[in-house]
Amino acid sequence: MYEASIPFTIAQPRPSPHPFGQVPCLVDNTQTNTHDGIVLFESGAILLHLYKEHSATSPTPAEYASALSWVMWANACLDGICFKENENGQVTGTSLDRPNKRIDVLEAMLAKNDYILGGDQLTVADVAVASYLNYVPLFNRNVNLSKIPNIVKYMKRTAERAHFGEAFGEGHQQLVVTSCDEWLSGGGTGGGFKTPKLF
Image 1 (tube, helix red, strand yellow):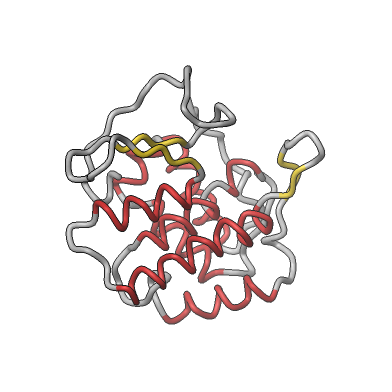
Image 2 (image 1 turned 90 degrees about the vertical axis):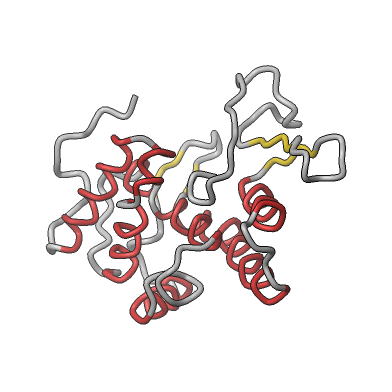
């Protein structure tokens, strides 16, 4: 929403229209829509709705199909690669630092392009993919991603954006950028620095 200059307000977390009472949840009551209000949950659904309904120019069918594919891939595949959880839903590790064919493909793609859909423009596909990647240093302080430098450069490039800091906070932004710098310099884990205050 920050990247696309979509105005919004943040509601209190309770009561929530989300069926499980969780975040994210979006209620779209804009006057440009011909409905009484749309409630969306799950980040991918929210991103695609905002892309289709609130873009400065309506995406073509081909543009929407590309975005749809990458947002769904991030939710279906990248989530499970980035975060390993125990039976209580607590993050216990990541597979980004282990051999993975999907990550190899992403690494090769990002050797040729700055962003997921090619070229030098951030898109909704990047918002989906980078958000998963850029949470990895927060939940996995001892991970070493130095073997996937193109993905690390992509993580840093997206985290350095002013709107990333606005959305996630300066502490999270600093953590991602510092971790990326350490991995790119050949350092060990991304956690070998003073932990910034996140709240």
